[in-house]
Length: 415
Image 1 (spheres, one colour):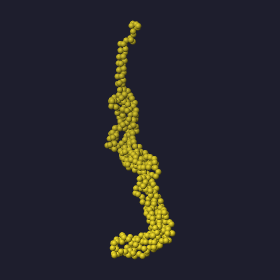
Image 2: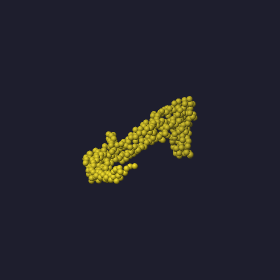
Image 3: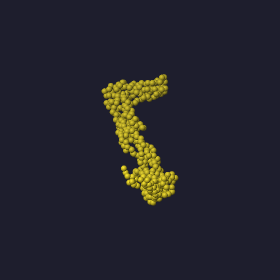
């Protein structure tokens, strides 16, 4: 057991209570004294802002194009209690543009704007760097810039690209006159591989000057940011040229040689249309109208919705008949059909020379008695007088025929 007579002051509760009170009073005294003390702070990165920039643009047609600094460093002195409320995010350096009158370069002082919770009357700016801000002001201008572009990809085989289509065809650009005056066009470029159908895309663009150099868009206002570009794609197809033959007079497709120059054309167009075209017939040739050789030049008919990539607009056709022979015979057997009731005919032609064609061994057995000429009078109706109808000459041999067209003279009269 401790001896009560040995207790000291350190063991007294009253002593420690007095010490605590004195310490609290000292701390309070220190805090209140520092709150009112003046301190200094260096604040860097204070952002530069502009007052009246919208009014400068809207009422005076002017725009700020260049600023030599976007942040400043300041030294601020004032009560420590106020300094503690300030940082680079809450303080601003403001340039007043309301007195700017025209396009020029200005050296402008800036005002320091404190946060609302700071009393500016007790603050003092002891230094600032830089001291002022250099700004360039230009006239506000606008122009319509033509849109151009390129497709930098690849096409599928047997396909053709048309010219790019831009919507809109021009872009309205607002900005400083010195920049706007240099603009030449808005350029669109895009890539795709193995393209086989028409593309329509929304593509961003860049602004270029007359020399093709990229223009900085920082101070420009664009009517829109993208352009709708369409790349028309057409199919390509090589199509053969042909002729339609009307067989007769012993001539058939088997004993006829047809040559066409050019023999094909290359077309481009919508695949749905091209898929249905496997040949183009440029003429109908009646083999009864010539003996053994025929040639002529014909226009190549192309659908208006297709493009002829070859460029040829006509083709030369040569037709040769082989293995047949011809000889001249006289027809003496004539008939008239479709004579109008109440009328009679008198055939004035007594003999008609014609050319007969057949294989040589059959041709030698054909004589004038094998021929018969028939005139159809239906077109003459109820008329009188001498007419010259076309006749169709028949040959008894089915493998032979008459070449050319013939007429006879017939007198019509009422009975």
